Amino acid sequence: MYKLVIQGGNALHGTIKTSGSKNSSLPILFASILADEPITLTNTPHLSDISTTLRLLMDMGGEFILESDNSLFIDSSKLTNLVADYELVKTMRASILVLGPMLAKYGEAKVSLPGGCAIGTRPVNLHLKALEELGATIEVKNGYIYAKAKKLIGTEICFNQVTVTATENIIMAATLAQGTTTINNAAQEPEISDLCNCLNKMGAKISGIGTSTVTIEGVKNLNGITYSVCPDRIEAGTYLIAAAITGGSITVTNIHPQSMRSIIGKLIETGADIKTEKDTITLDMKGKRPKAVNIKTGTYPNFPTDMQAQFTALNSIADGHSTITETIFENRFMHIPELSRMGADLTLEGNTVVCKGVKSITGAHLMATDLRASASLVLAGLAAKNTTTIERVYHLDRGYETIEEKLKSLGAQIKRVQD
Ligand code: EPZ
Image (spheres, rainbow, N blue to C red):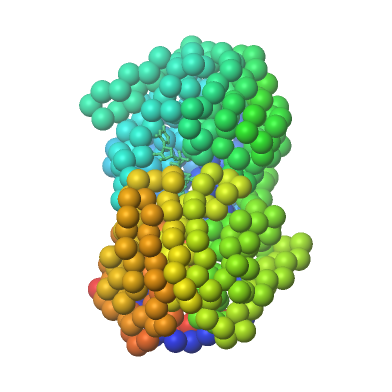
């Protein structure tokens, strides 16, 4: 295993290119199951979750080639094994996204229940209920979901809770269903719009993209295409906070600023000077200490839960008191005890962290627990006095492409060492 060793205190300066979105690449990779021909993706990030997904698709009979130009050629058009095995699913909850496409294309699926993770129990009941409404018969036993559907029939679906991957599962299932499906209270994350745009390019008929009411008119089949995955707004937001927490100034390129309005708004509240252009965002902290800012996470377009841990690190050294309220997951606070060991003044009250900004924090030996909590610890290490060591960085590698290279290019003193 590897750990990161960070010598804090450098203000970050420079320019970095945002990688393709993890949370857009994953559903689109599973959407390849729906096509009758191979698809080619460009701008997919090199992340362990992507590798896990490709392994799962291969396990089911899919094939892929990573081309020399970094494009990904995937042929999942003729799966021979309709089982998503526990050994792979247990490492990545998003594997549940195999269910909708398999039911739509093959009429059956056996998918391991993903189980919970560090940030919560993360049930899949809303996925299963909606698939049953589309006509699937579903049985859960021995830790597996057994699903069958002679033909999925379009219908009105209404989610009583906004859910990103359940919305994606139903959109994908409905593309090959008989008749029309309308999803009410659909999640509106930009990654869902990216999936819909890719599916429409494959021949699907989806409207209401990016709204809470999405309509999918079933078609007979979907074709192979080439598609470029949208940029990762959470990666970009994480690097903007890296500049803010160290008093530096960076430009993030290859990004869609309009997908980051809530994040940009909060960063401006901290006193950061932000300029946006068509596909770049420049943040300049001008050496100032950030002002404390209250945060409350919510579904898109509200402040994203995937940026909560990172902003908690920023508030930890900000000027003033703040509250950070997490409304999406029940346990997305694993970074709090670790930040406190660095001298942050954080008190958890229910689903709200009360933060009293301190002038400085000191490096410590820390343990990463989940993807965004790990990012929060890296950000704190960049701002801390002396050295921070972060164990179990495999959590980070799930969602951040070559994070230490990108940070080093901005002037951070960071290296990856073997345990
Ligand atoms: C997606 O997870 C993202 N993952 C998460 O990103 C993100 O934090 C989350 O959406 C919220 O934006 C991917 O896109 C691969 P949900 P998802 O279903 O779809 C409850 C990251 O760091 N719920 O929107 O699993 C659930 O427990 C990851 O990149 C049910 O109760 O999240 C949660 O409280 C972490 N039953 C709430 O809904 C269900 O069947 C929202 O979860 C499904 C969800």
